[in-house]
Image (spheres, rainbow, N blue to C red):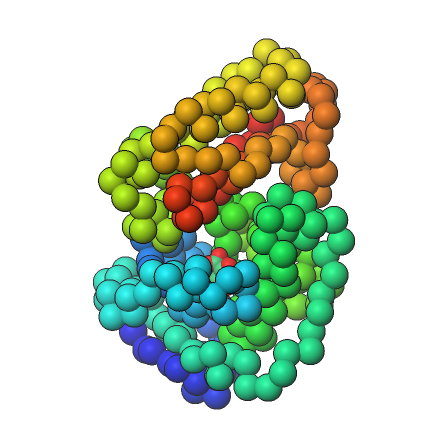
Length: 282
Ligand code: PAF
């Protein structure tokens, strides 16, 4: 596996490979790699000639410096994982390499960046978009892969590609779960044993909400149930639960048989924020 730290090195290398007819599949990450990442990377491997993975903890998408500083980092372990699963290229730029000068871009995502995650993490998606745009410009992949666990991020990235006209196919990837249902997430490793145990309730509550939804239960009752279930766990606190239109994340008010729906949830375990979602009718 090749490890590049600079933009010029990776660009030179990929330009050559592209001239030889190789297709490029790209997965951007912030490191602390887990099975959620490696399953995506295996898919990238199957669907492309070259697998490129970036590891960059993007300061621009963190609302507070504490969360940024506490974000788990273990670059040596990550590089070993990537090399073991046959990744071709790891791109590990410094902040100076990613942002050599003042960042002027300011993308407008409308309501999509104001709701749910956007409401509670002001500026988060602008920060994500700036990093992803830069990474896509550097790596120029044919396909870029994003997890559905960060569903709102996925919609933002699709919109970013639409706004900028970048010639890349965005490939959504299924959420990978622990046996008890907890969605894999780099922040899980910061949970205490009790928080980790309690966090399994998040997926279970989504399943319960799904059953109620199928019985056409009024949404206010579903929301009440979710709040009670989550807040009954001593280490958890519900931030939001919303049932929304999966195309634009506009909240839905009531069950409609032909309306697709997605339920999105954010929960605090201490100061660690966990998000998850479930498609209610495909
Ligand atoms: O989902 C992530 O890990 C990050 O938001 C991303 C897409 C790598 C951008 O920094």
